[in-house]
Image (spheres, rainbow, N blue to C red):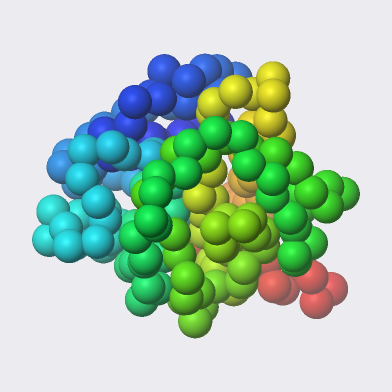
Length: 225
């Protein structure tokens, strides 16, 4: 798959790229959003960041917030990316009394394919902010002692986690959650490719390219048969 990484100033960029070693990835800084077409990618990853807080800097993150709201591509937010997604949809961020850094226990509160059959696991955390109020269009999937740790949009392929799946992969299970997300997207991409191929003859005759809405309509028609 082709994966676009939005670099929010993460210190763990190489580790994130290592986690995507089986895929083709391209990195652009958050300030460079618009320099590439996100529709050319199968998924978009919003990295962590240590340069500034999300709270109070929405003007600097305007391009990223617009991308989150408008893109039809699957999106996965990590730590800072988690907070940007949450804020983009109206969540409340709260500054912690002290920074959380280290291995933390996570409890799954809503089953989802990104967890498979995991009910609890450990991850690496490094952050000062937490999401206390869930955006109305999202479902909370997992929690820790600090608050919400994983969320999913109710109708769009948008996931986000407060932890760093790219770090300490031998000691934690964050990378498994991340890879489960990629597997979900890969299966969906194959499904879409099959649908497009099945409609390819008529599309070629018409000399046009199928839009996302047309693919979705073909999918619904196939399910009704």
